Amino acid sequence: MDFTDSTIMEENEEVIGTTTVDAESAESETADAPVEVVKEQIVYLPIGRLYPHPDNPRKELGDLTELADNIRQTKRILQNLMVVPWETDENGEMKYRIIAGHRRRAAAEIAGLAELPCVIVDLTPEEQLEVMMNENVHRSNLTVLEQAKGFQLMFDNLGSVDEVSKRTGFSRTKVSNSIKYNQLDQGKLVKACTARQVSITDLNRLNEVDDIDDRNGLLECIGTDSFVYKLRTVLNKQEAKKKKAIIKPLLRKMGFKPKKCERYSYHGDDTANKNELDVEELTEEAIKQFIKDHGYPAGEQIYYCVFDNNGDTFLFNDAPEPTAAQKIKKASEEAKKAQMEALAEKFAELEKAAYQCRVEFISKCSATVIKKNLKAVALLLNYSHDKYTSFDRAAYKDLLGLVKPEDGEITHEMVAQAVEGSPEKALLYYAYSELRDSEKENYRGYNLSYDVNKTLEIIYDTLVALGYALSDDEKALRDGSHALFAEAAAILKPSGDSGDSGDSGESDDYDDEDYYDEYEEDYEEDEQATDDFPFGGGNADEDEEDDEELLAS
Image 1: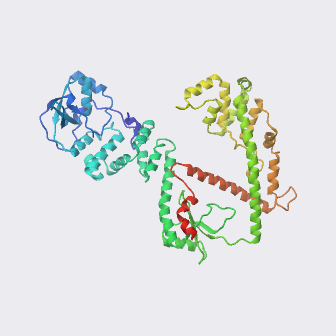
Image 2 (image 1 turned 90 degrees about the vertical axis):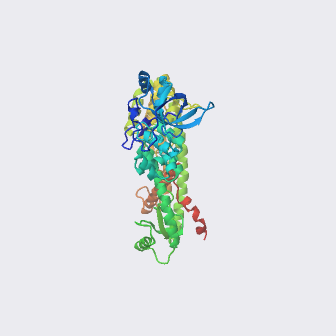
Image 3 (image 1 turned 90 degrees about the horizontal axis):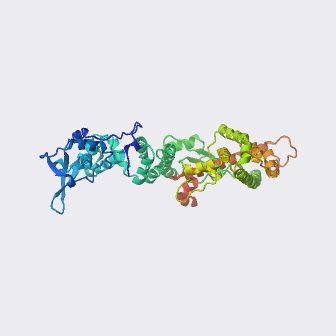
């Protein structure tokens, strides 16, 4: 694979140059090699007996055109090659491996030279590699991955990073980081570097991740805007894992027992004195001081819950046995909650059907109708831009009637062809897709109360202008007169309240609790989104699997 230096950026974020060595600069290619070689008389060897060295770190020789032209004009090369004896061929002739001069040999072959001046030297394999590394390792057109492979070969031979650093002149950190690149999935690494501009900084940040599978997973997004976010997610998980490895054995040793709990419990749960463990150092003395400062009752069992996604730890006691009145109130609240959940499902069914009707109408709207009502479409487009929404490409392509080919992706040409066939429809589809309409767009507020939805209003205004007729359910949902809103209000009305004015404190309390119910559900959805991320996430349920024996006891 052609993997050029233009795909890798130096640590100062500048792209590495792609310059090549010409005939004149080739004269100094081996001047800095620290290995003292045995200089022999220069001999001319047939070019067919000179072979590239398999351990040469430079795999891509670059553009040889200019160098070959110079050699063709002068009919010679200005600097001899350095070679070592390799093996004899079937005719008993010695073949040689090139130590210095791979580009010169390749360019000379293009220029038509039959023989090249060579110095035959006697070097150990380790010395051969060291000469080749020092010939190439400081070149701007040696790719980062080629350099890394060269460092790896030297490390394998020399046995230490310090020795490689000493022989090459590069810092120990540079050598160590480069060697770690070789641990990555090379196919994914090369693919990422050829497809995107990947900085040295980003490659080195991968070394902060301990797990090699996580590092390889991050190669899917390295060089993109999402890399830092996903890297941080992986590092947070890694930090949490290390934190858990310390905190859980320590808490067990102190006599605390594992027990599940809710991270946020705004309307009460079965815990008391719940506090997040926040200490500067995870030591027994610090935790004892934390217990004292937060007034945990002496002699009562303390439980702990460690959340998997970030290692946050909560300490708590069992909640006291509820009174009869509290039990009655809780049962009433749970009954109301079940009624509200059933009502929410009814809302969702209506909203799904309404969304499907909107999409069907837009997809079948004729170009003639759209053309007569371009002002309405323009207002829709203007609103979508004012709202700063993110364009729904999938919905747009679906409306255009494009189907993903079995052997590829929907191309720009396919989209352009569909737009050209009906630009009026494409304009409406584009404006609609900007708003990201879905079955979740509705007129519901907290506690299933009516709430104006500006996005749905502009969508419906546009559709009506184009000839859309709202169903009775859609009209009632839109103006807040639907019976479901009244049912929700009736469920939440305090049992002793028969009037329409003034809610009791109890009703307000329930409203607040229901609000936080929805907040917790949203939070749990966010937690699940973290779980769906390929490098992990999690919750306390998963975290406590290894504590089942303790829980059982």
